[in-house]
Structures are given as C-alpha cells and as structure tokens.
Image (cartoon, rainbow, N blue to C red; front, side):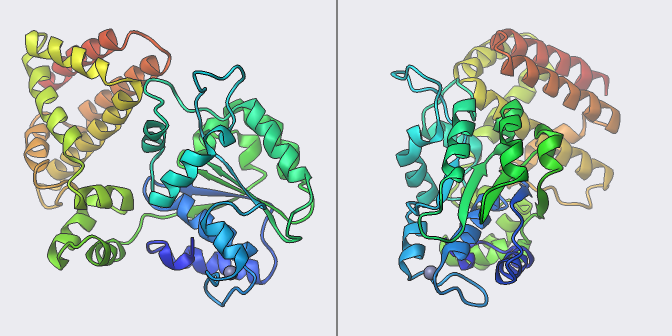
Amino acid sequence: MQFKQVVGQEEIKQHLVQIAKEERVPHAQLFLSHPGTGGLTLALAFAQYLVCENPTETDSCGLCPACIRAEKMIHPDIHFTYPVIRKASANRPPISSDFAEEWRKEIDKNSYITEYEWLQAIQSENKQGNITREEANQIIEKLNLQSFEGGYKIQIIWMAENLAEVGNALLKLIEEPAGKTVILLIAENQEAILPTIISRTQIIKIPKIKESEIAAHLHQNFNVNQEKSKQIAYISDGNYRKAQLLALGELDEFGEELKNWFVYCLNGPAPDLMKWTEDTHGKGREYIKKFFDYAINMFREALVYKYSKKQIQPHVSESEFPTVRALNKYISYKSLEEIIDRFEESAYHIERNSNAKITLLSLSIRLNKILRAS
Ligand SMILES: [Zn+2]
C-alpha cells in the first residue's frame, strides 16, 4: 500500500512521512479512527514507507523488493494481528496467523473493510472476534527476534479493542521494545482500550475524510458521475467504506429492515413484530449489533433534521429519507437519549449470549412506549 492509495488524510500522511524522515517514529502509536476513515490503510502505507529501500519525499517507491513484499503482505518484518475466531477443528485458542491467507485476500480486496465484514469473511456467524493471550505471546516472541532486513520491525494490531485485558501482557513490550520496533495499534473506540496502553502510546486521531476527497475518489474509481459522487460523499459523512457501499448500491438491506421494524414497533406486539424478531434473531448476533448501530445513527439523523427545522439535510440516501422523515415526528432530545440507552442495554445483553429473540422483543416493546409517548 502506498500513501497515494489512501483516500484523503493529507495532513496525517505528511506527519507520518516527516517523523520517518527525521527518524523519530514513536515505538507505539494508536491510530484512533472513525469507521471507514482509513486507519488500517494508513498503517499499511506507513509500514511500507518505513521498510521501503528508496522512499521519496512523499511516498514509498512501490518498486523495490521491500515494497513488493509489503504490498503482498508477506514482508518478514511487518506483522499483523487482527480479531479471529476459533476454527472448529482447532484444539487450542486461535491466533491471527490461523487466518493469514484470508486476511491477505480480504485486505488486498479492500483495506477499508470493517470488523463486521472481516468476521463475516471468516464465517464467524454468531461468534465474536477476539485477540487471544496466545496471540499476545506470539507478538512478544516475534518482536523479540532480530529484524530480518536489518531495519524496522513493525507490528500492526487492527481493532485493538479486541485486546481487552490481554493488552496487559503487551505493556512491557510497548514500553521498552527492542531496537527499531514500531507498534501500530488501530482502534475506533478509545474507551475499550486499557488506560495503561493508552498512556504508553502516541495517539494519532484520524479525522473523517473530506467530502470533496471522497467524491473525487468515487468519480474516478466507481464510474459514478460527478453529481452523484458529491451526493454520496455527503451522505457517507467522511466514511469511505460507506461511500463505496452506496456507490455499489449495497447498503439497502438495513434501510428496508429499519423501515419495517419501525412500523412494527409503532403497532406493538402483533404477528408482524413476532415474525420480525424471529427472522432477525436468525441472522446472528453480529448482524443484530450492526443493525442497532445503523438504527441509532438513523434516529440521530432524524433528530438533527427535526431541530434544524429541516435546514440540515440528513446524511442518508434517497431511499432512507422517508424513514428519517417518519422518525422525526416521534423523537425529541429526551426520547433519543432513552432510545440510545435501550439499544445499548440490548446490545449488552446480546453480547453476553442472552436470548436474542426475547431481547429484540422487549426492545421493540420499550420503543413502542417511548415513541408513542414523544
Ligand atoms: Zn520501495
């Protein structure tokens, strides 16, 4: 990956090039990004820049043997850790390299992949991704070795939230790594990372991508005309992954589902709602959590639309707009707060293996009350 393949983020690129040139790359950095803004993509480009044999003022050369190996994600000094699940046949906890082939394939296809999509790709179905203690041990082992090429040793930890308590095992390594070690943690939720890790890393906040940059990329790469590109860029609100999906027309599933569910909620516990809980339960835990995120976001958009007196165009597609319009009649600041609390509470239960069907039904009934009272 070269910096020129990263959508937007010019200031971050410049900063990374600068610290590399001046040889003041911190041992541990946390790329704190919003979904779809390119945390992993930037880390890949930065790692390649650090190992490149002929880096320019702005980018890796893309041609030297080190670049070619980095592009293929087979450079011996660039290591990857990402959430995985236990393979059915395995008799030990999983480590990232169990899925190395899948990882290369998916990231080569799209480095803006979301955690949800990654877990789908390795067929986690209902299982949650995890970074295990065994993986932490692997990291320590690998980083204690000499670098193969005599330069930097780089460890990329994607979705570092999954480290949870296991992160404690890495504290010493992060504090006093051997030689030219660079640990790049990528995360979207700072609160889910141990404070002891946070305090030992330099945080780089990856902002949302500028609308004009997303629009230009879509226009060039997705055969979308200029006007439509601008429209999608606005809706995607700085999230390039969302923009890609919109350009490919692949975001309609949740929209349709929310629209129907909203009507069922308003109607209360009738056969339609029962069937919905049954069907949605069947789609698995990860799907449900993702759907909750989507729904919360739509409620938020509806609230902004309402209180801006319809002056602020919501960040939604044409097909989602009627839902926002319908929602805005039923929500207020107070009810939104309550709605978000209920969603979070339900997500918590679902994460902890409670009966998803009952959780979905009780959430629907609570929403019925909240929406009816607003
Ligand atoms: Zn190179």
